Amino acid sequence: MSARQWPQWMKHTYYPALDGLRTIAVGIVLCAHGGVPWFRSGGVGVDIFFVLSGFLITTILSTERQRTGTISFKNFYARRFLRLVPALVLTCALVAVAKAALGEPFPSVDIALALTYTSNWARAIYGYQLTWLDHCWSLAIEEQFYLIWPLVVLTVERIGRSPAVKAGMLIGGAALVAGYRAWHVGIWTDERINFGLDTRMDSLMVGASLAYLVKALPAGLCPEGISKWLGRLVAPMALLTVLSIPRIVTWYSPWMGWIGYVIVAGLAAIVLSDLIAGRHSLLARLLASSPFVYIGKISYGIYLLHLPIYYIVEKIIPDAPLIVRLGWKASVSLAVASASYFWIERRFLRLKSRFE
Image (cartoon, rainbow, N blue to C red; front, side, top):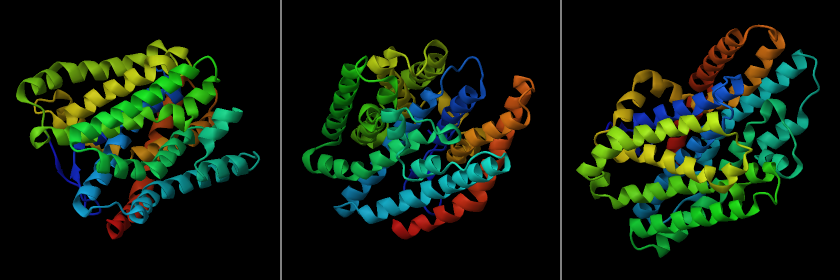
């Protein structure tokens, strides 16, 4: 297991392989939105992000609660603002400028929904399409989750007597959300099932429960025997299964609402547990390599910027072969996201140390 300290603006253990897992997640989204036939939907990638976010945020909040006896809501939301908002504003600016240059109407409603983190409900309730900003629904779900999660962590910390009990409470909560969603499949629209916070937050809660499960392990590591099976067989098979699911079903299949989201979140949690608590992880060696780590570090910008860039490329070279269009889409997305990370996002990330 490879781990080191976070960069100077962060105060928690950093696992390079988690950035590598972000690369897998954003790669699924890029391929699906780019028209790669294997990936019929990019939702698997989003669910991986959800599990990762739930784990990391809960680790940070629970550690602060145990260290200081409380959670500073002001500092938490300030850190979230510094991490999330700059790249989102840049993306909205890109959309506004590009649409003006192409002679299209100014997308005032789309930008307002994206910046207020409410686009998921616009899609869930009204079926509203944001076109160039359609993917902001996942950011909206995460931001709404962040609004309530510090209170949940405080409650769990006060009630639970051990990390295992706390993990059990969150797993139970995730099961309730999954059952609630399954109950409404066929009653609510596909959009309501896919884009509502109340029907999708179980993936975040699965990641959150893993934060406590790791704390329940001796020294935060799996036992030797389990670690060998996990790292050499179970976790690689879990990742291969996750990569196979977009080939089989789309995110609008009723099967996803019934049990699919649960399976994907569970498989992602298996991979994540291997990367952070395993001692014999084959995946960690791959995902901690420099290319995977680099793309993972800029994955937030890639996710935000890629869809507008994809639309721009389609406008400029609509008749080019798929491989040519996909090459331009991917390369420009990586280049613009890199510039965003080094010139804009990192400047704000350094300010996070003021709110630790």
